[in-house]
Image 1: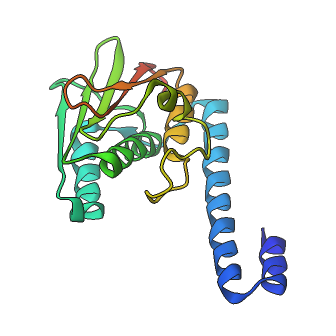
Image 2: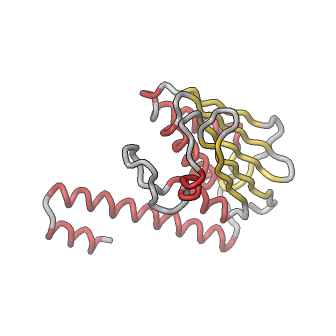
Length: 194
C-alpha cells in the first residue's frame, strides 16, 4: 500500500493524490474486514456477542445523527426474549450497512425488526420509491450503484450479503408490503459456538 501512495504522490496533482490516498485507505479497510472474516470463518472464535436490545438503539442513535437533515423516523421492534447472537462487530457492520442504506433511500420512515426462535430473523425496510425486479437483482453486486447521485461506493449491501453468507444465512430483497420501499429480509441460523 505504501508503494501505491508513493507512486500516486510522484505522478498526480495534489487533488488527484488526495483522492488516490482516500481510495487506498478504503481498500486497506476493506482488506482488513475480509481478513477478519476469514479468521472468524476459520476458527469460529468471537470476541463479544451482539445484544440487539442494547446495540440496536445505539446504532439507530448514530444513524439519526448521520442522517439528521432528513428528519427520518427510524423505528425498531425486537422480540422480548431475543438472546445475544453472532459476533458483535459483524452484526453491527451488517445492520449498520442495511440501516444506512435504508436511511439513504427512505422518504421519511425506516423500520428494523428482529426476532428469534430456531433462527434469527432480521427485516429492514424503508418507504422510499422501491425498485424494479431487474434493479433488485443488481443490488448485491460489489461496486454496482443504482443511483450515482446518492453518496456511497456500492459496497454496503454486498458486504451485508457476504456477512450473511459467512453465517450460513439467507438474504432476500423485495418490495416492502407495508412501506412500499425496499425490504431486506435476513435469516441467520443459531449456533452455540457463534
